[in-house]
Image 1 (tube, rainbow, N blue to C red):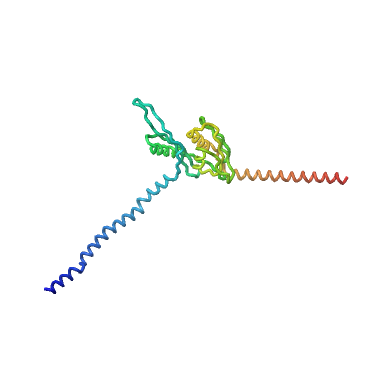
Image 2: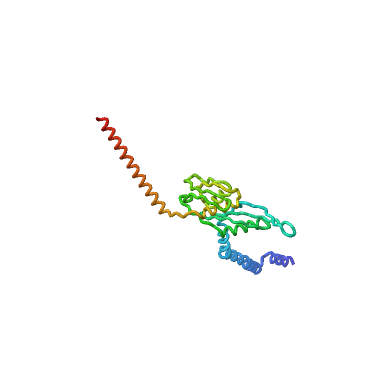
Length: 238
């Protein structure tokens, strides 16, 4: 009896190879398929979504102004929010949008969508605008002047944020009209839209002409100085 018990205990302690193989096969079928699905997800499905997110996040957003507005209805006053948002890619593209909604987030989303439809491209020459301009839109009046390298953005208020979003590193601005943020933002964007595009080749040719003129002037000055010295020497010899 004791030998029979020993043989039974040994048989119970030994693992069953068929059961272990079946368990391994089930685990491989379950977890192996999941890993493959994850890999396929990474390769195919998520790449398109990532590209869309990158395209959406190209523009930087700045909230310029948030105002609470009321509309008088038959039952009383209805409260809404008006958001003014500026967007830009810091590469010459900038836009301003206005949106209204019962919540601030709704108003901001509407303003961003409208600003994306009204983007303006700014012509940049030597890290600044090509020429000075004074622009008037409604009650707002803004003056823009090109700045030399290293001078920075000399501006304030809403106009400064728009210049930063447009990616203009050197510029001087002055608001001459109203202090309304919405009007000043629209006027600044409209002024940038009215800038004339200057080709770099034409500017180089103009610089060459100016250098030649300066050389001719310096030569004429040297000749005049030599003549004056000769006349003084002749007088002294007499």
